[in-house]
Length: 169
Length: 83
Image 1 (cartoon, rainbow over the protein chains, first blue to last red):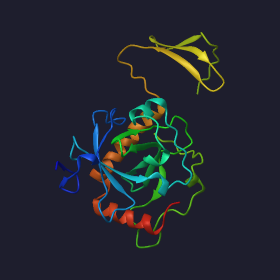
Image 2 (cartoon, helix red, strand yellow):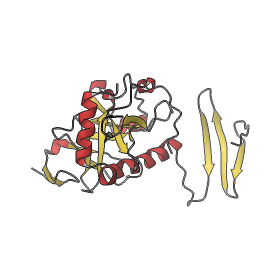
Image 3 (tube, rainbow over the protein chains, first blue to last red):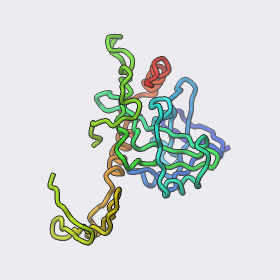
Image 4 (cartoon, each protein chain N blue to C red):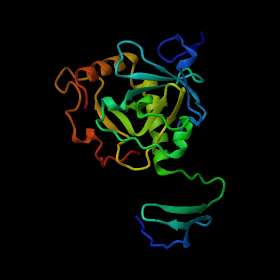
């Protein structure tokens, strides 16, 4: 069984079927073509997209369905091709990459979802051309200050995927 | 923002050597032709934003969030789903 050096979990053995090929890489990481989706216990609903080429490169991700109700994914022809073509919706896993800024703000990128077809072991970052979804969808703070503002932001109407005017750059 | 009206077939320059031509117009889409020197990067805006966001996401686990912090974030998301 092959094994990969990972950023946070040491040497991890994996089944070849767990390797996901991103044939065109990700924007800013075009040469990263292979990732493992690591789902260690205790981290649900979060998962780790671990690069196979670069052990120190690991993305935190979350299923979009768990943070945005009624998310409407649009796949262009190019992205669909990179996923091996049409398939029933249920076969595609749709994830958002999670970012924590140096100020501690936790956000998920709903504008550039990671779409994976597990059966085909193919993935793509399907950047949405329209601006309906924020690339900094708030998920709250990772470390609450002694309970006063503990927990996540209250339910936001924007969680349903309405346009948000926060600029992304 | 500078706004310029152009018809299909018309063009404009940005600087000395970047030419942008309106190739085709339809109700929901415009097709643009761009001529620029090889050193000029042309990126769709959303791809550039995705690249910037990906860089921040990649820094997240290396600089701004420990795996322990990720576990506590996960616990909070389980207790109090955002949706």
